[in-house]
Length: 376
Image 1 (cartoon, helix red, strand yellow):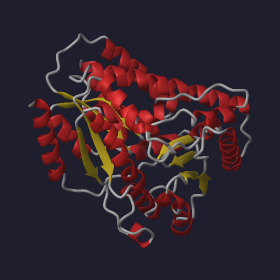
Image 2 (cartoon, rainbow, N blue to C red):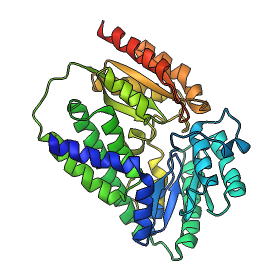
Image 3 (tube, rainbow, N blue to C red):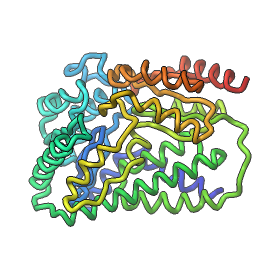
Image 4 (tube, one colour):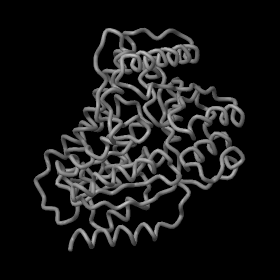
């Protein structure tokens, strides 16, 4: 158990100081590419010998970014732009920005005007992603991204390089799935905070090194004896569920995360990239099978069906929707997805979060009441 705790603490330290990870990569002579959510083809940057560096916001108060965005834009974009305006991201050689929601569509222009020193790589994909035409459109857009990355890297990126990078990422996704399953079996050893950190650390580390750490950690977890758990189990859903305050509230109420449908977590690693003769086509085809995210076209809201199946398979007591404040796609999804969850008879709690929140007492009261209801 002590070895597990030590390894989890090391991954938590990575998340606590991502700037150190960026500095270490630069010291090794690597160029780093910032990657905003969601689903950017970061394998292409990895194939170029550059290190992708996740930009998922930060818990901080913003000031300068309010000159570019109104208050009712999600705090993830506010805080990333704030860091850029303050020069905290000047060491990046570029940033990938997906244009998949109304707020992100204007981010690149705001960044270019306000920051300017770090070039923007816009990433587009087809929303009708299961059509052949949609897959071809996405492939063409990823090839365009590839050309911009080659210009930044100063050399060409071969298909063999991309195939090798895809293999690294597929191995990482497999390791993440194995870890997630092991963590669900051992909630006494892996708290919600530790689970989140182990997954999130991959956005700041070299993916191959992250895989090695996860594989060792999962082996240690699987070697632990079975332990009883008298707490609750929930499945989480949303964009982000990495708020330290909220995760601590779950721990205080003896609630474990049995599985998730979080964009930053399982939505990233549930589906591998297929191996194809044209590796960029394989990356485009991966979009055909991704489910469970509000920024992807989801006719019939299959996200709700997936959540119900996840909760049943995990023997979860309920579902926790971590709602990112001012996220229109998430709010649009809520009513139709909730109807499916209600129809399945699964308890649901929605908690609104914001990376600029300083008081989580309302969330604490809601979680405590939810836990009491589930235990009744």
